[in-house]
Image (cartoon, rainbow, N blue to C red; front, side, top):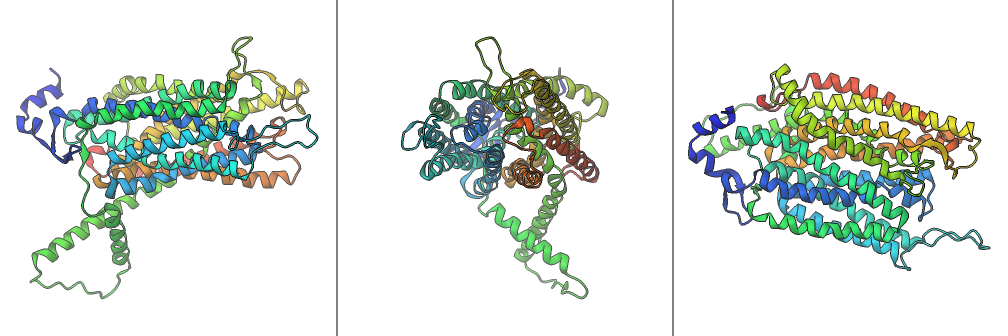
Length: 551
């Protein structure tokens, strides 16, 4: 008999099947462990996540192709625009999480996000189909060449695009937090299941992403952008219905009457005032203080401790930002880098450039079960801790793997440029270079493995270390690492482009055969190495919120 089953036998029935503290159902009634939450509820949410990631990456994975194609942008401008959009999609979660934690609730936030997503993807489809909204095509035989969208078409496209980004603000922090809420951390079995849920959540994400980068990118490149965008809206509808079908068994976290965000702001102000007190300040307290004032003081001290614990997360957050920069390359320069390689799967089937992103997500799909079922048990025996390695050790391992990924990407680019010179294709930017597409697969696989460590580790870390009432905000903080990383990537590209273009040959030339993405990748590898050193320094001194979590 397993330890978990023995332990559950010794627990009173009231503990096992009584109402759960801090959770209610959708009608505000108490919920019981036996009839709510757990993996049954989690499966409904995992299904929605597969569809949501399919739809989102159906846009993001091939966005740079649409920007440089129908919208006629330069490579540097398109990369900056794509990074700005993905960055905003990762920054909106701060707003969505604050609203969910203080007012809306995670369940309703997810429902709102899904409705906004369906609307946004539908508008994107219209922007690519309807003549008044569709960008005009270039015609080289015309006397006056007119191509690209007008101002109204651009405005409609970007409004649609950023509506999707706003939807991500509610979905990204609340989806995973709501899924984790389905597991009671006070129960040993459910606590272990919750840790596993983070792995399988990312596994489900990658299922959706893999299908998107293979199917959606192929349809967009070979059939049409209207269908490619429209099917994203259609696929979300049955997923939303499935999510609603699980409403009766979801555990909803009880939202506090007072805004946790407002309380946090007050605690930061109180903490700042306390820190500035010096010398003879009024610390004399009357012994006749009533119970209410004593309670208020205790509450204020508790809030200040929460503020200190959140501030302690900042060094970890700051020393993970460069990872967000490397992460941004997957859907931008990695995709452009492979466009002119030999993409023939057979003599008649041409692989879309964005489809190679599937090699990274497929690696994740295979690696997550191996990590969860093989590596963790082995490391658990060695380290004598339930998770095998600590959350921060997991993040640091991923950062190290991402450095290797950037170095490999640079080596592949050096090989590509060398091949272009050998075959005299330097000044033929549209020519196919006789170098297989699969040369670029290792960099995708490595960055995928890095994600299993870093992304999942950051998700669990920021969820676990935030106060219970602000866990959506914790996952939003993790998202800002990717969001600010994307913005930093955009700024870095713009600065490097401006500096290097003064010499006549920019690193990001529209003719990639004269560009130097290899230099850029090596720069990112160097920045990541510095980041890893700083991350290790701060993580060694970090004290986990709960002793049981100091894994």
